[in-house]
Image (cartoon, rainbow, N blue to C red; front, side):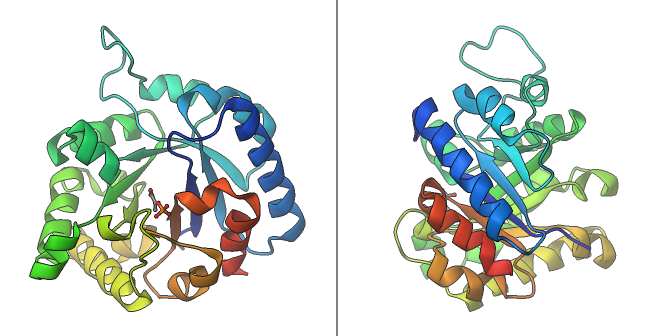
Length: 254
Ligand code: PEP
């Protein structure tokens, strides 16, 4: 059975005291109110990981993620962080290929294939992001583009490896814009991605992979989106910075 996951990508927001306050609020609200068994992943900036890990403690419901990592073990890469460094401070999940990394830092699917492999080799779970820009959607080439992103970054993995990957479909036109893909559009793309995996590997393996939707998910649209058969949760940006909104999104699975 694949896992439902709600992951909060804080991006470059929150000082450490603000992040600790947000984390404590989320932990309390999740413990007191959430009835479902979705995994909740908090994904703060690198500087906060260790402190936030201490706050999370040994919770098996609230987990810790990072927003990126380098594709090498160690070395002369000033300003970069490696997968084993992340593992050593309690990180379990790593976002790779967020559209902002692709757009502002030139990350290609070839580079992301290396990062995904490296993260898996360090026993961490990659949250691999894919998604099309508005002009691609309008031209009708969105399935081809997303299919290529997934194939180039993931289809060199063995069946045992790809099973451990979480995919996040995030249409770029819906990120931070307040415009959400309709539940139907999300379902259509998630089913397409799952079919591509089934075609390359097999159906039962494809059924095991969690595919999250990201792009302006809010408490008032989460339930409809998460109720789609191929949507297994969300990667949440803006709304993850408000404990009440984020918890209410997690509660959409109740
Ligand atoms: C994101 O950046 O991954 C994201 C989904 O952002 P938002 O929820 O703000 O659209």
